[in-house]
Image (cartoon, rainbow, N blue to C red; front, side, top):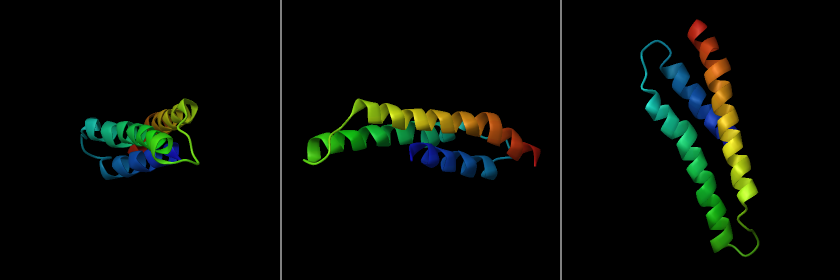
Length: 85
């Protein structure tokens, strides 16, 4: 899920800024940092605010891995393809 979220942010950013020099700091915050923080906050909410769910470090690691894999795919595969078009 977090890989998909990050991927959508990356694709939207790359499509909107394919021709001009973009500030990649915005996409790093929006497509990398935001989903990772969201995953961490949701894991903490599961641990402290519910009785039927628990926060798990492995879930957080899986969320972070999804974001990193989506970002690598976007940067090394999708970005060159979009720039070529």
